[in-house]
Length: 273
Image (cartoon, rainbow, N blue to C red; front, top):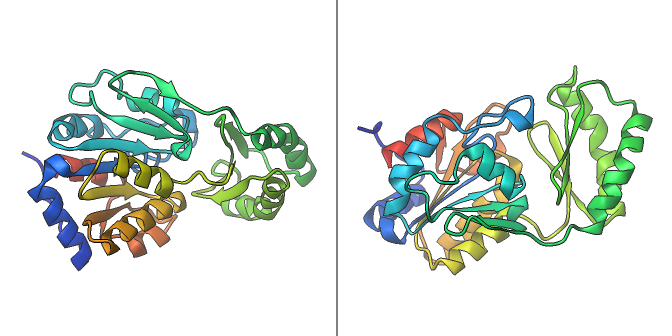
């Protein structure tokens, strides 16, 4: 037996959940990865889903129109870290990596990806010199995502102070090479414009001719997906906004219909569905 199904705190959320439960074969579950399915960890390469996530998705996915994970990570890494390939019940799962620029479909096992943006290559080359000039403290790390570059401050002696130190210089560097800066939970990501979870989600929902959708996320990058669901709701298609709660980001919780206790809460929600 799963845990009791939590009740959204907003009328729109309750309507969305009722529609989702009434027509699961038309409904989609869309999920962020880091901070939503997987706990935030000091080393991004060590991120793995909460133990309850994949079993719950394996039971839930066959009942739905689709399950999609939308992440800033490369699709290949999200699939590998998530343990999604070959998981029973996830034969129709999709992973949209690099904010939708990359795509993995469980049905084929293939990854589709565009050529890298030249601005990312320029940032990759110029970033080490910038960090050296700024004398960033030990513990600041750079993650090369292929289609984006992320600078993490979580392991610095003063994570928040280092984050603030880097924001404007990195914004200037991104702008100089035609990229945008996306702040997150002690991470600053430089990536091409036109890549966001809202656009990726809307494209996927149109492709699958989806009805109600439940989206769960935890960070500022998920606000675009929230906005996409709100747009669909205004047009008459119900949806549910779920925040994987933390003390680091409050903006998402303020917009959500339902706040759960981090990845453990997301796993419990999936199990209860």
